[in-house]
Length: 299
Ligand SMILES: Nc1ncnc2c1ncn2[C@@H]1O[C@H](COP(=O)(O)OP(=O)(O)OP(=O)(O)O)[C@@H](O)[C@H]1O
Image (cartoon, rainbow, N blue to C red; front, side, top):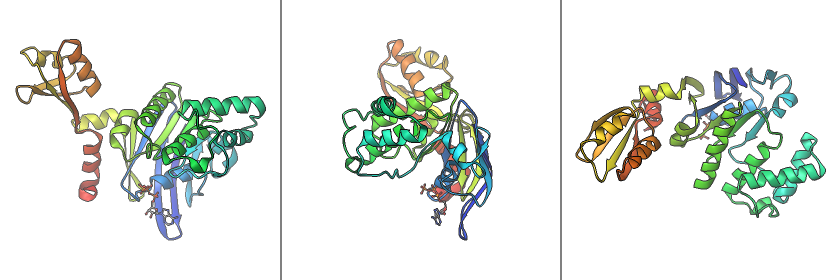
């Protein structure tokens, strides 16, 4: 569990974040959302123990990052926005070296490094030097490194940046599995559609302050999220079929809108009944909610 308590960080006189308070419970994936410069990286770095707060505290599994930094940071895996490594190292050697910090050595460290690199999709690139890694490979490597001690808590800063669709799918699965496994994940991202897919709660940060903390269900209800679908072979029953999923209405002869269902649910429901789905789009949702929250500033 990750608890942020009245966390404030000033860079000299410049405000980073002020009075940020929220928690990430075990079994929760919380998205951290905000404009450029809002304070996401600062929040994550202070919580990870790499920046000292001006005041307030972050508590990891009951341990203060301020008064017991070593113990608290052992319990959290951190993937920075711009991962920085000893670039002359070869990937696997570096993971083995990092595992040493957790008293994992010898064959055990070797096997762990290979397994983690395979898990994040870097098999075949274990022997390459980190300086030869692309941005996406570095992100994948940083993910592997954060998993060495199999911590119960994770902090991911823009982890999706630079990842290809396969990498994004890996992260999505990792987050959902971790959620089921009772871990606590806080991740920042500008890709609001992915935050919507993965997070069960969202912290909106604006000008250094956490201006709202909301469950995804509430966000979707308030933002009147809906799925728009175009069907190639509509008939007079299609509306009834869609109504089984949520509130459905016809928008035209072949297009329909359903609220209270996901694009996946709409597609499988229609396909199972022999309809041809031409187009499915999510309307409203997190993005709409975010902009309504911060007013005209983001547009
Ligand atoms: N080293 C620093 N020195 C001075 N000010 C800083 C420093 N790092 C961050 N800031 C300021 O703190 C505020 C929050 O920055 P932060 O990097 O946390 O935002 P962010 O939400 O992560 O932004 P982005 O989406 O652009 O990555 C900004 O006003 C920024 O200018």
